[in-house]
Amino acid sequence: MGDQYVSIEHVLLAMTEDLGAAGRLLKQHGITRERLMQSLREIRGNQRVTSQNPEATYEALESMAAI
Image (cartoon, rainbow, N blue to C red; front, side):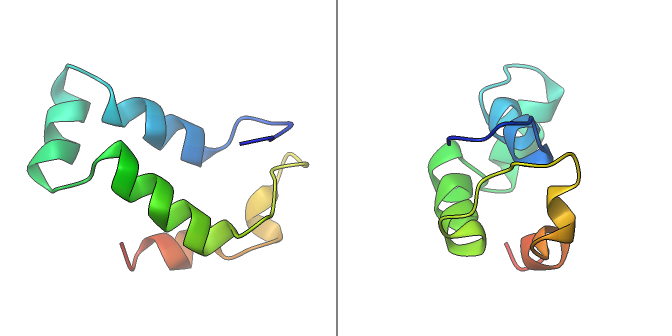
């Protein structure tokens, strides 16, 4: 993704590959890596995580609620 910092998006993407409870929960709700990546592209556009507080530069939490 070209980011300089790890953000919550990276954690969510990792969770989609989890074989444990977190991964099962996401799958039960239809959240796949592909769908999450599509939503992230829509929310982030070409923006990259280049600071320790990327949410201040775009409204990720508000936008993620629409997923």
